[in-house]
Length: 275
Image (cartoon, rainbow, N blue to C red; front, side, top):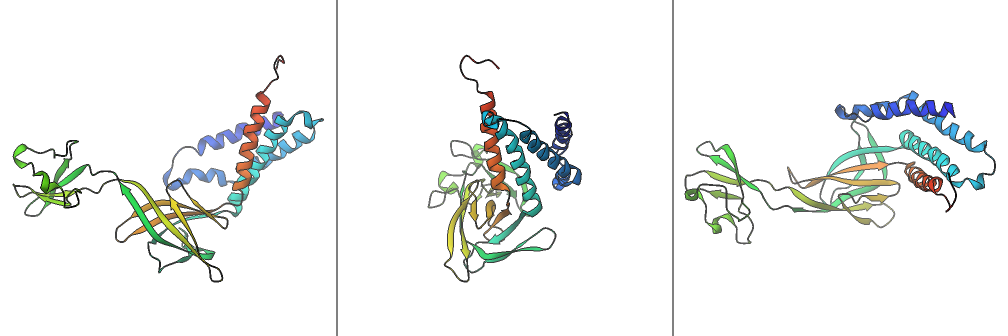
């Protein structure tokens, strides 16, 4: 028991040191160190030994679940660290281009047994909040003009454009407006509220599969999980995707649920029974 407490104390120091932010996620290096891996292995081994030394385990389901949960979480995390793959890449939105090799930051690539293409993308924006003012003759940026809630601009009354000049024929905010003093107003790019894309998985010997991907709604396919990270129209319509393959993810999820159930079981006492 004391041995396990010492291991947990040292592991807490690793977790705390890995929680402080650093450039390029350098803080995560502590979780890849041989010492941390050895300590996690020792903790899992201690949990197995602790369970094996107990009699009448069927009377202690909460105890068993909590200890085995630690083993599953540790094993799954190590499997993901040792055999997992992940990368982030940017791809154009087109039906004519498919990706079968995912680039990695170190210059290498990950081969896929299928092709992936982004055939469509859509974004919803929040209403514009301001215009950028540029002054002639060089049209240097002067300031940012706020759009008020009543639909007017934060300008002097004599510079206030007509309502028709602020909107196009579809009722949208005009991209550019020329003021009476010659200054030019350029609509500031609004903030993206929601964006989604259509992923098409291409095979040489089978029909293609199509899935919709959105923020916080990843797509799982053949052991891979794809996350929509970004959406851009410059210099062309494209999206940024994060791809991850984690063979230990299922074991970690099972272990977390076992830990939740086991902890609740340990805390439960029948009515009239004292701890």
